[in-house]
Amino acid sequence: MSIINPDISKAETLPSRYYTDSETFEKLRTKFTSNWHFAAHISDFEDNNVIPLPHLVGLMREPLVLTKNDEIRCLSNVCTHRGMLIANEKCGGSSLRCTYHGRTFGLDGCFRNMPEFEGVENFPSDADNLKEYPFSEWNGLLFSTLDGTAFEELLKPIIERIGWMPISEFKHDQTRHREWEVEANWALYVDNYLEGFHIPYVHEDLHGVLDYDNYRTELFDGGVLQVGMANKGEACFDLPESSPDYGQEIAAYYYWIFPGLMLNFYPWGLSVNIISPISVNRTKIIYHGYVWDENKLGEGAGADLDKVEMEDQFVVEATQQGVSSSAYERGRYSPNRETGVHHFHRILTSQ
Ligand code: FES
Ligand SMILES: [Fe+2]
Image 1: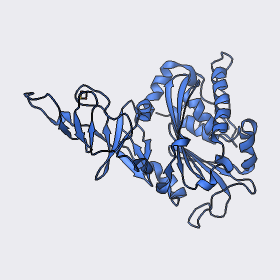
Image 2: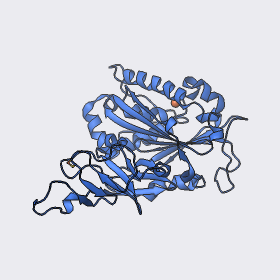
Image 3: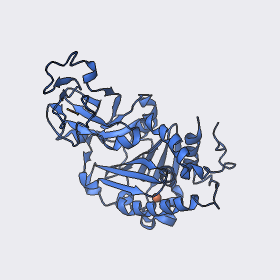
Image 4: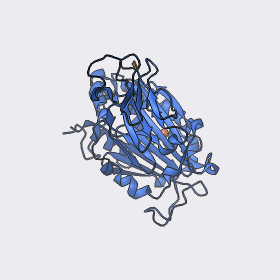
C-alpha cells in the first residue's frame, strides 16, 4: 500500500526522507533497473553502426551497446576477456574490437578472434560471446531494458495520441546535446517537471507563449502527459485530422515515463531528457535533440530550452536545501495543478 493517499484532496506529499536519506535513495534506485529506457533514435545510425550507451550505465548499471548489421541488437559492451568496455564512441565498421588486447566480435555479439590464445582449452565457448539484451523500437525511438516487461502496454497511450508524428524521420542534432549535474535528488527534478503550476512564477518567457488556464495534465499507467496549449499567435502543431486533438492549438506534448524519461515534443521536433540519479542529492540530466522542422527552431514553448532548464534547476536545487531542513516534513497537493506529481508519488511509493 502506498503512503500517499489516493484522494489528492486528502493526500500529503512525499516525506522528506525520500529526497534526503541515502538508504531510501538506494532502495528507490532499484526501480530504475527494471524499466524500459530510451537508448537512441534511428537517425543516430546514419553514419554509424555501433552506438555505445553510456547514459544507461547510470540508470541500469549495465554498459550496453547498440549494433546494426542485418538487424539492430542491444549487446553487453563488456569484453569477455578481462572486462574492458569495448565501444567507447559511435563508429562504423563490420565488427567490434576491444582496444585492450584486440579481441573481436561480430555485430551480432559472437566471438570472432583473439590474439595469443593458441592452446587455450575449451576456447572459444559460448561464454566468450557478448550477452544480448531485450530491445524495442517504436517510430524510430529505440529502447532498452534488462528484463523486457510489456513495452507495447507502456507506449500505448503515446502511440494513440501522437502516433501520427513522423518521429522516425527526425534528425539527431548534436548541437542540442546537453549534460548537467544538479545538486538535488532526482525525484525533486521529476516533481518539478510534472506540474505547470510553477510556470507563471518561474518561467516568465515560457509563460508568455503558453495558455496557462488551459494547460492540461493527463495520467496514464506508468506516466503523465502534460499538454501545453499555445497562446494566440504562438507556434503550435499542425495537427492532422487523425489526431485526437485536431482543431486545438497545442504548443507542446510533455511526456514523462516512470521513473526518469521525458519526451518533449514541439513543432520543431523532440527533446529527450534523461534523469539519472547519481547520489541522494546529486542528479545528472541529459538532453538529446531530434529535429523535425528546423524552420520552427527558436519558436514557441521549445524555443529556449536552456533558459527554461536553468530556471528549473534554480528552484529544484533550492528545494533540495528546503526539504533537508528539520522544519519541513511533508506538504499538500493542489488538486487542480499537481495531479501529475501526486501520480508520480503514488507510483514511487507503491510495491
Ligand atoms: S579485455 Fe578485451 S581483449 Fe582483453
Ligand atoms: Fe519548469
